[in-house]
Image 1 (tube, one colour):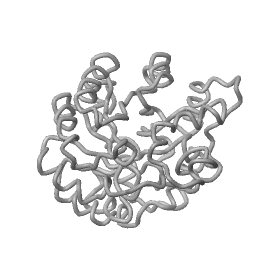
Image 2 (cartoon, helix red, strand yellow):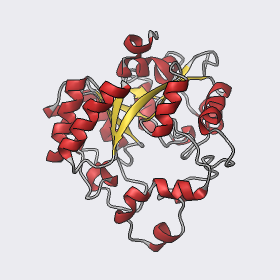
Image 3 (cartoon, helix red, strand yellow):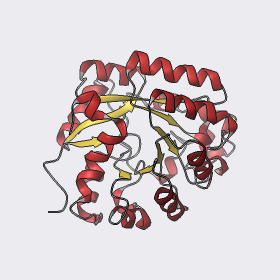
Length: 298
């Protein structure tokens, strides 16, 4: 069977294009205090630009970013996209409630109670389906297992929301210690009710991530920011054996990778077993985000 062309895909990481390079640069200003190298400060449009080519995230000023994104989703059979709880994301869900769900990404985990309140407010006001955190992108940085994160994890448990968290060597040129994969072990031990989904690969500790997923029922992995031909071998093997229920599809469109590249490379380079594809592209997302309860999906 191979790649299932008739499956309604759920993408756990879709955004919207910018209508100018200036707007794109402005979106990353929250990380500027962390930059030290001249190339990042003076030349890059976004802080991990050196890792990506032909990023499709700037369109003509007259383009409607939401409808542009929706058209690409339709073209590649993406039925539902999880997007950020931004003005564009909120508007997208308002226009197309059957196509978009919202996740709240925390930008200041040093404000512990502010983050806790933001989670509860976003759940009440926007019915968010997840919380997200970029530990290395906080200023000052906040490690995955830092005490500041514990009330935030507790709030996720109370609100019955999964936490999507970056893990592994960070792309932008800043210290990676906050995202060491080994930090997840302590968090999973202390929060057995928490559903955690790692973002951005866990490299070069993907084997450790696999071992921890075997150990902890609540720990999952999504493929955000990776072109399919670069999916880590350990993760593909794990999905094809004991971990089919733990690996979720998450693109990085349009921030880093086009949907055309995602789904072309999946067909050509990802050797998932036939029974893994529906779980990876749809069923695991429905379970983790509880979309069966929220949207009646199966």
